[in-house]
Image (cartoon, rainbow, N blue to C red; front, side, top):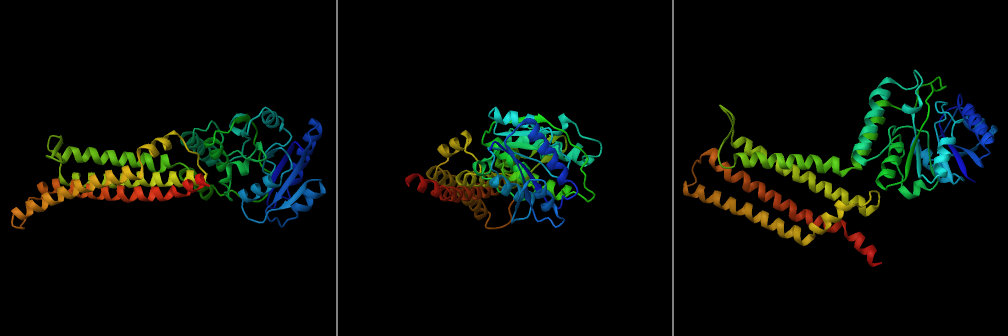
Length: 386
């Protein structure tokens, strides 16, 4: 069988019949060897019977959630290709030819673009049309170098094995984003075709919850992009702190006449350096774990980090940094001893204590982070041996 037309369903008795009829007419018109598959998510309004009476194959999804229904449907699809779309009559199942044509041309994933095809008045809430969907699509392009202009479009086609190839696993509304993100990360061949969005035919409220589901999608983006979640903020904080510390480590720094950066700025510089370095190490941990488990692909940056940052080099550098901080601390203690352990000039002693304490913390973090990264890589080395 060439194609499965998949529709997730949860109490869509008002519209599912219309969707199935449109899909059936398109199949007959284009002489496609296809099935219509309904992945039901626990409907209580008789949607299953309506679908079965119209000749669709109905399966019951054990888990709850949009993603759960789609994963179950895709895994049970008999077609070589799958075209999925919501069963609320907002997507046009009588115009699937552009999707199938692109799939036949060898594309792994074919996305619909509602902004290019046309959005009917009232079909999409303004906050989705002008803020949420454009923002999430922009972030998708920025974080993952995706070419998709409408990352949330539910009408899309793909090869049936996409779940297993990409290890898709999210069960909620963020499943739509997961497919695009992972397809982009693993360099799948992706195309985009115009499609329309109509006002859905339901009398009840949609299942989509604007802010909770929007946050779940954004959270998914961040968790799959260590670069934007950890590396970029970490580099910004680290180098900002380094600049502040270098400006104030010897003498107060005058910004403009009468305004100086002094010991307090030096202290915050150290805080920024430590915080930034913590973000960078968390990014390395996350990236290593994700690539070891296979849900993020390795890239050239990972290879460079592995060559430069080995367990031995991390231990050596960490010890050197720690000992440098310890030496500074001993010198500060010596100055205090010379003052017979009395009061010291606050601004002057902090110029020794703050950099020394910062180096001790950095060295300690680097030392133990090196061991933790080595532990994360044990699993892969074992696999290589086997």
